[in-house]
Length: 206
Image (tube, rainbow, N blue to C red; front, side):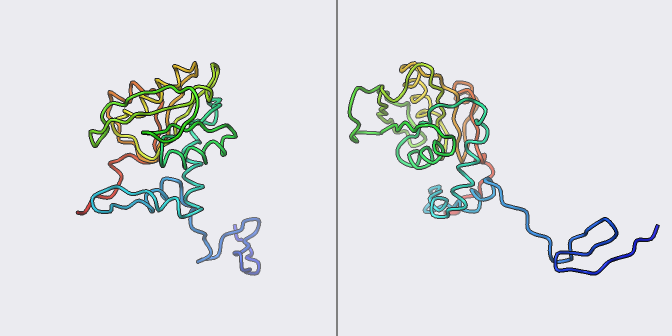
């Protein structure tokens, strides 16, 4: 069968009922949240740094959408975020899901009212943190999602789960940019989703 090629146009070539893109006109595949997180990740002085994500509006929007996507059908009613990057990511994620945000403060920062309080197990730097959550922020029937930038030992996430459940809420899981959990804390935390596994990051050059 022979096709009669029609005139070329800026958008491509018509061949019968088919339309083929012109050479050089193929658009690049859109970058995923994972791609953008990797693109903006860097090591500074041996420390992992994701702050560049927050400076790029498109990257930030994509990353926030990627964080909430696995939980859209989980009937989330509240997003928790731990000071400090969790405040930024969690607040944006709560807007994306159309639910309220519950801050979890560290140390002695002002947080009025009756609070649930936990001392976390040692984190990756062997530090323990006093975490606080306003009891009035969560009620029985709430379904809670924790959003953060990184999870390694799971010590802070475990403390947040305990506080949320003390308030009568249901813990659904947590979503992070970088997932570095081992099996034992992962099993204790239930549903954990990460845009990146730590092994996918570029090597640290010191």
